[in-house]
Image (cartoon, rainbow, N blue to C red; front, side, top):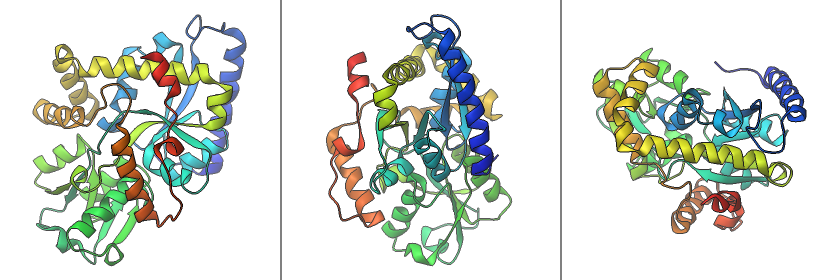
Length: 325
């Protein structure tokens, strides 16, 4: 469910007030007593952010002194809230990177994914990408990784993005619902939505990773937060590392399939296929190769028409993560 920015700020201010109250009762060591509420933006519930949902449900973040409050909203709204200090973190690397290139003081501090898991999924009668010219495509936001991936897939198949109408659906669930209700001709879906739609007969036209190798999900913080609250950043990263190690352990695969099937109300066969698709994109240690980040920068600069040169150091600060390895 989306919310106005004003209502969002009211909600987050209340959460922040609670966090401040807790801070006075919690010793310096995170997790020593009551967990601190930390607000983390997600672009919608999907397997791309399962590391956060599962870590919360399994109590792995709680062990690090964190009560993670997952807030779904449009990526551009989330970035504005993050810059205003009304959110602690965002997970949307695409919108954050676009903001950084426009001067915002943000940093990538952790990579959940190396590549996107989005699949361009269309109505059953649409059999080729070129048939999308003149139609409506749903994306969370035109400037996030999902929107950029859609444009690059179109270009890669000879379709001018200006020939397509992009509908901002705010969050992933809305995009899927819009596809099912035929409000849009196509959208980019992460697992398990892409696998479920394919099982229902919708056309899986392309994989985003083949056209736009962009990291879509990770952890983004303001540079101010990195200076003032390094302990908070470290606690969240520790929770992410612990959860990702659990997800990637083959011994836990059946548990994960059952978790996905139950959380998303899908058949176990779909859940297993979706899990495999997601795990293939995961970072092993929260980092991403420098050359791959440099490639991302080229894509962002070209798509956003940014003349200024950027390096990975302008986008990321992995110093806290590296201390934990």
